[in-house]
Structures are given as structure tokens and as C-alpha cells.
Amino acid sequence: MGTDMLSRCNQADSPVDRFISVVAWNISTLRPPIFGFVPYNPILGETHHVSRANLNVLLEQISHHPPVSALHATDEKQKIQLIWCQQCVPKFNGKRQLKLLSRGETYEMNSPNLLIRILPTPGVDWDGDVRIRCPENGLEAELHYGHKSFLGLRGSHRSVKGKILETSTKRTLFEFNGNWDRTITMKDDTSGKLTVIYNAEEVYSGLKTPIVNDLQGVRSTESAAVWSELSEALMRHDWEKANETKNAVEEKQRELLRERESKGETWVPQHFTLTRNKDGVWDCLPIHQWVPPAPIIVPLS
Image 1 (cartoon, rainbow, N blue to C red):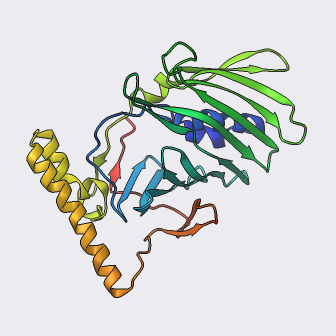
Image 2 (image 1 turned 60 degrees about the vertical axis):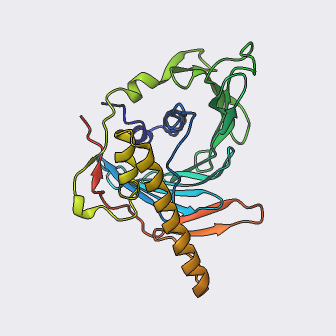
Image 3 (image 1 turned 90 degrees about the vertical axis):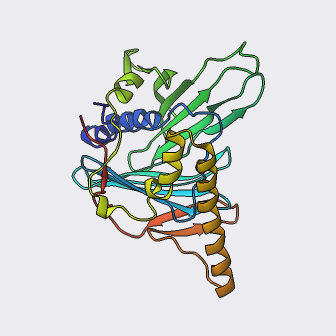
């Protein structure tokens, strides 16, 4: 099975070891993006509710224009809470928090940018700087995601470099280097000791396809339900039916919008409260403290 990087964040007794685990988990959230035509265009209010062991995850599409997604994930056994709110515009704006509730620690972080290329060959990659900060333990991390240059003559594909430092003194404690789709090695700046803190193969290997465990519990807003006919048409290579189904879903959304506008109503998310600052950055707070177990599960083995 894939390595449970999130649970590790709460298991270490040392604040430094917990911070290192958070850095490794943050790197593990990246996946190689796929470039090409995507027929699924998330609709307003679309949700995805899934569980893996004790981790329950709930996502909701809280805005259509611009596209903004909110995520709330909790593990009551480990006392872990995740809150993400992000706007994908190829630069991922928004706020991400990982809370280790039993430790009294909150880790705040941003996301790298999504780099889209058309020339010399079409493709996408992760790029830019990420900062992870935990005020309670006085540590922060700086990560830089790199990519090859325009012609592929400079840079390293899917590279990540960075360091962990004390916030108060800015003294570097650890440096790390590697590739986020392979391995990341960390060097202790005091002893010079090298340690592999992340191995992508261990994380990816054995991951299972989600299965429906409780059909009656699946919401009508669940992604799998919203796009079921489209998915079936794509698997049959029935492009005409796929296009017809996609248009039907989107036309239904336009009808609901016209109906709300005629009544002077504003759409309100079911699972989050929203704020938006003067710079246009969205933030969200989950309505409920814990995410309940989902009708869709990811098997452990």
C-alpha cells in the first residue's frame, strides 16, 4: 500500500521531526499533471466525499467564476485537520492549513504554480516557491520547485530544493535536494548526515481505486454522480454522447443560475463559509468540526 505520509506528521515526539514530516507530506501532495483536453468542468456545488482508513475528506466547488475549490479533511484518531481553499488560475492562490490538534500546531503553506507550456512541446509542470510556517514551534521551510528551461538545456526536471530554518534566528537547520517524482534527500547542517525523507515510489505504489461502499449515501452533487453518464460515454468512445451529456450538465447549471438571478438569490455553499479579501484571495472555514465517514472509500490493500 502507499505510505501514509499524513499520519506520520503527528506521530513524532520532536517538533523538528514533525516539521520534517510535514515538509515531506507537502511534497507528496504533488502529482504529475496531465496536459490535454479535459471534458470535466467542475460545476458550482459539486462535491467529492471519500475516506481512506480514518481520514475523511470532503471537497466542494464553492465558486464557478473564478473556479475555487474548498477542502476539509479530518482524522479523529490522529487529531489531524486539513483546510484548503484554492483558486486555480494557473497560479494557485489561496490558503492551506494543516492542524495537528493534539500538538497544538498549525502549519500554514501555499502551493507552487502550475506552469503551462505550448512550445516547444505542449506540457505542464509545477514551478515556483513554497513556504511552510509553524508559529507554535518556531520553524519554517522554503521550497523551490524547478523545471527545465524553454529548450530543455538548463534546469532539472521536477526538481525541488529547500531548507528548514529557525524563524527567530533564520539559522538553517537542514537542506534538502532532489526530484519530487523520485526521491528527496535532506542534509543535517550540523552533522552533515544525509537522510532520504521522501520516496515517490513508496508513496505511489499500491494506491487503490476508490470504490462505492454505500450507494444510498452518495450525494447527488458527488462528482461521480454528476459526471457518470459522461464517464460512461468516454469509456465507450461515444464522443457524440459525451459531448451531449457535457452540454446537458452545463445547460442545467445555466438554468439554475438564471433562476437564482430572477429571484435575487445568491448561491451559498453547503459545507463552508467564505470570505474574500481586497486582493481577491478566497478563504474558507468548514461548517462542521469533523468530516463524517464517506460512502466512497479508498481501500488500504
